[in-house]
Amino acid sequence: MGWIGLLLVGLALADLVHSVRPVKILPEATAAIITVLLGLAVGWTGGRDLLAVVVVAGAVVAWGQTVTRGFGRDQAWLPLTVVSGSFVAACALAGYAGPVGGVLGDWVESSPLPLASTLAPDDFLLLLGVVLVQLSTGNVLVRLVLLATHTSHPARDGAPTGPEARLKGGRLLGPMERLLILGLGIAGQVTAASLVIAAKGLLRFPELSSDAGQERIHRLTEYFLVGSFASWLLALGGVGLVTG
Image (cartoon, rainbow, N blue to C red; front, top):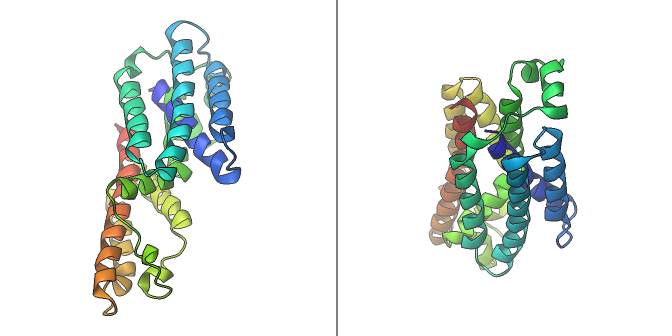
């Protein structure tokens, strides 16, 4: 599972760097370099492991470039194809990956952190990637899904007031929600995770059931449901990947 973890870490780093420093090419180049260094740090210095590290770094660069194009030219299918193709390939070839060792492996095995000490190095790298993806990359994927399905935000109609104008903080609440669901799922508290999902619907119900502007409310409901389900599936997919 090491190659999958490395890929997820690389994709997440590209989006995190972009969120801090949105300069052309810099985020994906930085993430690709860190990905290569991380691959070397886990002891993948020869043969197919080294080739896989280089390919993963290339996929990270392709992700960053296509995301920019996807948002700028309304071609969301392009980055979605890159990320899904890379992930499927990593899963299909995961059995050929060498064990995670090197500096990272030594640190995990001797770490004083309770969580790290209970995991094998391979599992730790995978968990790290899954957690990081829930942050900025999760938001990017949700936006791409909304764009690909032509689910427009009602605020684009130019209305200065209404329920959609009060839907603030999604970029912060999304990662928090996904991390909470991921943590509860990994801990085996699936029922508690489902309560989080139900609570979000209840909290949004007054805004989504407003009598003002029913056509806009219908669009807002669709936007809310598509975005929420995409976000939840990302978190639940992470749970399945880590616990599977």
